[in-house]
Image (spheres, protein in one colour):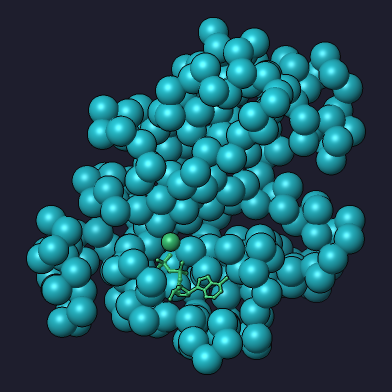
Length: 256
Ligand code: ADP
Ligand code: MG
């Protein structure tokens, strides 16, 4: 192996899967992301917490370019975010996203919801896409609902389908933006359990959540945001037991 190749391989091993460097974002006069620097390595579960309006969702949305940034740099697996076209579609396929609202296609069956993107973007044939979809639906425990319409499922079931749909694209990283906050309380755990399983299987995950039990159990690292800034970055035990900033202490006193 050439010296250059060895060097590159070393770099690969150390290279973060998601890297934000000096990211800045305004909405008009509102400075919503202030010098955000963040690295997520392969297999890591990062949980992002912080008060409402602190820029968590915006940060998450910049990672698959649902939001543009003013300046700074975002890389997935070492590659800068493409601006448009086919490359952008491919990037979005690599970055799975699950939102607070379930976002399933209302006029398609559960199975069709999961097969659509693999057929269109990955050019899988129908049979292959359906086999994959059924495997994933079984993994999240809703395979018996495959031929129903989204409106026939509970919120917790719909959210599990949304996770299966994202996984069908074989993403490198999964982003979760408060995936349980629109659910009735009795359905929260069925979704968190699926997320915990994914984490155990080694999926790289960035999760915005107010579920502090989940954060403690599943997170490798906690990032605390307030007013567009990352104020703390720590292990779950360190963050929950010994928050450093007054903002984090105040936040935790309200939420725990
Ligand atoms: P969080 O997810 O932490 O609650 P957000 O990222 O949703 O915070 O929002 C951060 C700030 O940016 C808030 O003040 C919000 O009102 C504002 N904001 C979010 N999206 C937009 C937008 N598309 N246009 C203008 N302001 C926005
Ligand atoms: Mg949000």
